[in-house]
Image (cartoon, rainbow, N blue to C red):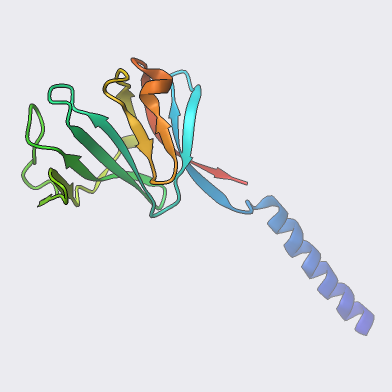
Length: 161
């Protein structure tokens, strides 16, 4: 009787192990920079709740500009933007976030909260003087140094391992 019970317990444990073997051990999200043909030119880990910012120099004034994205449970969201001033084409859109003065000058527009359709943002990478850079604060991808003039996608991808 005890042997039968132990055999059933062992069988149940074996079934659970086999079921888990088919399940992913963990999922990792990354922000991939890729060409329209799918060639990756770089990536940054992009965990849920994390922020990654795309920074560059404004084409007219040369001042710094940034768009910051969050991974919100697998959805790429434009969460906030930085403007050095309200020069050519820059500014706040009524009802789209809250404007606040940035420490050291310029302005942040917080609370934009716009999901990026299809988790992919198309970008024409600027020349080296534009200096497109993606950064999570620890890792920097210097896009203008890698792909100046190229059309790329910033794409949130989740991989299971």
